[in-house]
Length: 178
Image (cartoon, rainbow, N blue to C red; front, top):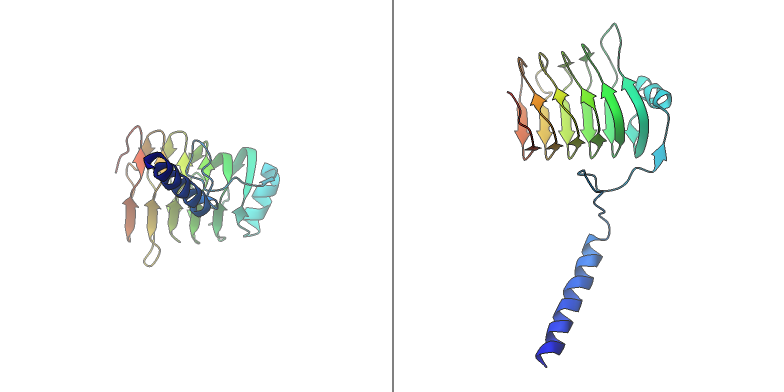
């Protein structure tokens, strides 16, 4: 009788757990809850960002750079993406930058001003991530960095944040500076 009860108990718990967790798939090696479904070229991703369109459910190889002489006046959104290489060096973003539920193999934000704010949530960064000599968010535009996995060093040296910053529940394997 004991074995029958134990079997029934295990069966109920396993089938119930599967039912409650079936809408969430953890992709190995990152925090993503679903796998991106569309492969696009780096050129197409760049065009979408230039048009102010979000990058959602995509993956691409190659290097995507934001390089403009003036301020970038479009919102930048990466949601549920796998990105080989993204950089925005010496840029000023007037609109929000939102990186959510994405995996960045290489990413750099050196000397970047996030005037419109920055949100990085539930992302994985495989390599060194540099924010040094940046920041500068304006009133009402917080910097929010939560629930991320930084697999290498994260550099915030000489950053100046003019408004609220939240940095919590992040895993940083090789350390960080503030």
